Image (cartoon, rainbow, N blue to C red; front, side, top):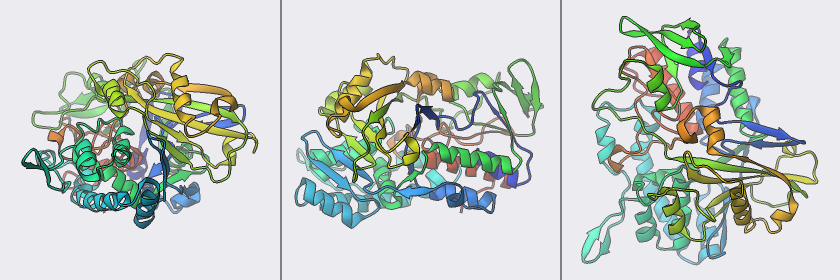
Length: 484
């Protein structure tokens, strides 16, 4: 939709063909008995991406279409040893002080020093990973580690951290700080033991740009973008499954729909998972040798929606991260050879202060989320695992539950078409390019890719940037050098 709105403003006639009956991909909503829940992302990082979209596509700014609320504290963390820390939103000094008070003198300084190094990684990768089309010589991004790790003496050798886990162990030197760091990778389904140190940009982005909530839930952002598209005369066709991308004389000519109907087009922008795109483009290689290969996601999400009796207590944190009691066991369960849902996993608890989500002030809507392997078959009892973990943050939770609903990887697969309900991670530098995503351009003339499975990868900010990049490549041509 971000690409569609920008292309319509640029003078193109744009039609969106959507397999399901609504817009927004995984950004969905469940409503029942006066309760309302987001089933996709629950918080918005880097809202400037979406502010830019609304500035570039109409007179009404984003804040005129949705209400943005800065979340403070940014998050409350409940660590394995029972200690807790509530981190202020977008305040380095505040976070340093909060960590020193909660975890002991010196912990805040180590985290603050880490954020300074993470800023260097951000400055080195922000343009190529978010604001520019993927470089033709993308191998440079794959080979160079942008994070300036501190030299570490180990067994008579001086080494530098190459993974996020090593940054935590060697530079932060506190298992709670390491868990805080690694939770940012785990939230995207990444194994911190193999994720490059460049992933330091993930907590840095949250620290600098803050964490935001859209009043009414993130589905309201999807609604606002959809309405901006329709205001710009974008046509939407729901329940219209594309079964093939048509070619003529070496370039795209349109799409074929289920039932055999053909929609002719000069350009096609595909926002689908790699396996789906391979099936749609018959007899032609979408990606060539030497290009970033399409990534197949390995991680998904399990979400438990809780309707609770009793109101939300004053002063409750919007987001609480309850860290796994056994970090190594969790990582081995999720990413080991016999990947499966972990027992007592890290759980994110969202408790929005939003009267519009509940029938009255005597009730509360809570969402629990954990990472699970893509394609995992989740037994019904597993929701109890998440509830048991969440009780460390919400004492007496089980006794307050009126009802609960579960959203599994199969539900994500139905909404997005991604195999196994996989959720794409954002693009990251280093790591031999394992976490880069393919270019938005393809070998098929006139065919472009957008969304989490292409550059710059998954996440709401990245979705908006991919729309801007595709629009730039189409409007300005292959010489387009990136967003300003």
